[in-house]
Image 1 (cartoon, helix red, strand yellow):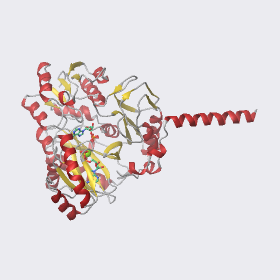
Image 2 (cartoon, helix red, strand yellow):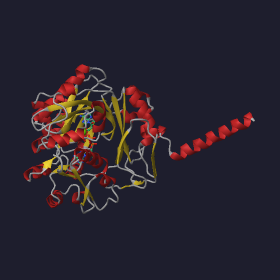
Image 3 (tube, protein in one colour):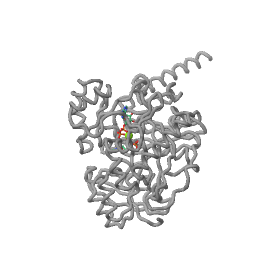
Image 4 (cartoon, rainbow, N blue to C red):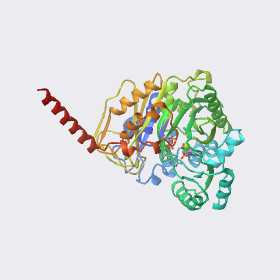
Length: 478
Ligand code: ADP
Ligand code: ADP
Ligand code: MG
């Protein structure tokens, strides 16, 4: 494996993470950049750089012919896709296999089988895994959706089979809402994913998003690395993750059950890389298969922190047919607690993307904080890419310690010049329900950040008031 040349078809923090792992293992990291990226920080971590000409993602990070030309010209042996972009693209993994290029991810059949939400649910069901009640396969008409709605009971969720990133799904409370929303969700699915097909699912109220990390080699060994709780979400997209799940707590029976169920799903598709099986868990701790992500996930660091396993390095080893760092499931242990905050260039109240130029960036962190990020002072965040600019990660002996560390860390993170969700994280970390670990996916809707996130002007006015009071006190004393 040493000396193999690996192209990273991604950018931002994940490109940096992958480059670091490649360099450490003695492979050659080759990075790319496009016309709308000026001084991208990920290139600093790569040993070689190749220009991927163009500024629209369709012409760059999603353009298979252009990427294949680079692979040939620069004698590339393997490709790491990161997350998003081509990471779960069946055509890409197939073309690489045909050309004898190592895809640092699972085999193309697993990518295909777990790629569409309807097919993957069918596979999970056949493997004896409970799935969210709903349609079997694609639902083509409004009438069919309504028939299923009446059968399973409202509310239901209309969901794009090709969906990802929380896009292409809408809950409906009744028949009328299905009629109103069906065509719109189809259109959204078609424009976001190039495929308009929908499925219908029971919309579970106040559930927990709990997922299990899988790591497998090319010889049929499949392991789990315990679970993560990702229920703090906005627009069905995660913003805070924890490992292990505070909701499962010390219920070791449920923990073992969900982890072994995830392994069952991975086995059903002969999984052979790092991947994640996502479940939705109700208040009664019953869980249902949601989907499998056949790639490295944004929140992988918290699992690395609590298991000590370098997921990206092991994913690279698996792809090149090398043994993993461990041989048996018994060697993997949960140790302590980790929390991750996704730091996004977005308005902390509307939670919508807010690109712009950073004018100041400083960190004062407690011992042991991990900040996987892609920014520097004067870095510009463009609207062309995902607004996530970093992940702040803290590990502690237990949840209480991890919470204290992450709270101190986020107060020591200063990013000026752009709007970020740092203020929102501060509100959540001080909020009682979160502190108790008793939150579901409806949590964000309950905290009313608009009442709690102080705009900068208010903070300044408040500081002036404090200064005036102090001045008064001082004069009173004299
Ligand atoms: P994770 O489960 O790793 O947190 P997310 O759902 O947050 O994954 O997605 C990670 C990144 O990949 C985001 O930038 C998201 O927009 C992108 N992404 C995920 N799935 C898709 C998809 N099917 N099509 C396009 N982008 C996707
Ligand atoms: P994506 O591919 O976009 O990640 P998922 O199917 O994983 O789509 O769902 C993303 C999130 O949407 C889940 O974490 C959960 O919060 C919510 N969700 C999805 N399906 C359901 C459902 N049937 N009931 C309630 N919430 C759901
Ligand atoms: Mg998901």
